[in-house]
Length: 357
Ligand SMILES: Cc1cc2nc3c(=O)[nH]c(=O)nc-3n(C[C@H](O)[C@H](O)[C@H](O)COP(=O)(O)OP(=O)(O)OC[C@H]3O[C@@H](n4cnc5c(N)ncnc54)[C@H](O)[C@@H]3O)c2cc1C
Image 1 (cartoon, rainbow, N blue to C red):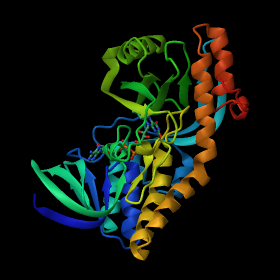
Image 2: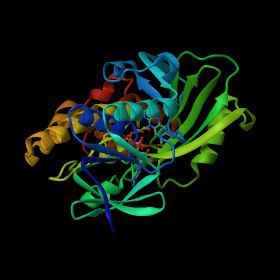
Image 3: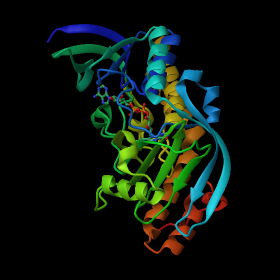
């Protein structure tokens, strides 16, 4: 096979993690290639599109990326209680947002190949399939930002094991909603249902532990019925998996970095991963570019140290709460309500140390 190109850094996956890593590495002088297996960056959307307001400190979010701001998080417990927590955020147009992040990477000098899937490692880079042809690309460093079932993760023997299976529809609303809403029920096993408004529509979905008997689509239909919506209001549907087992043991070797969902940096209780993908993407891009500048491969390890210092404790707390929730999950709606008050982020007891089970 002929060598087609050679780069300092190849980033696999143009989601929020990969595009951010590619942008930051490009800004820091590295020769970068960003690969995306889909033919269009950001599409199809497999996300409920909620981000915290604080993310504006890391990304120059444009008005056209925002479907709607939200002012609070409402939690609906199985026993009928409702808890309201002020929490400013945005529901995005994620396809436009992801495209913008990839455009920013390209403007920072990163080359972009869409329709290019990373297949396997080679002696000094990787093999991709692009335009129906296998190509070898030279790469001093490879950043795996290729989502929950990461191919690069498999090369490192570091793969996510615990997932939520999510199903979602976008539904036409009767009237606008101003808050993000979360619903707990014994049906949504180890997960929850959500309603995230987008002006005239809302993303309505459920996430439940992978391997649970009963399809997420049927459970979503029951959730819609409880909310008073029928399938005749659905304008689009999507599904996906969310890694919720917590960070992988190692996200760094002397050649590879893992970032975002590929690294298990998603929050184990909320399933939110956009913000962490962007924060950790910045760190990965910086560490990779510094390694190229200095030729000192040990500097790749700065990435792992930095993100664990910044996020490690809060992600571990989420893992502990998820483990506790899984062990104590019950079909008794009163007992489940009490459990959610122990383990969901909106309640003060979320931060309480959980007994090891
Ligand atoms: C239904 C659902 C709802 C969600 N809702 C929210 C939410 O409201 N808020 C939130 O913060 N998070 C949410 N998440 C999680 C969020 O979508 C992820 O955490 C986030 O997308 C992680 O970004 P990433 O860049 O790490 O991975 P991804 O966004 O998954 O990007 C990975 C990219 O890599 C590409 N790729 C994969 N393999 C290869 C390969 N071999 N070669 C080349 N390219 C490859 C993929 O096509 C993809 O574009 C949700 C997830 C799901 C499934």
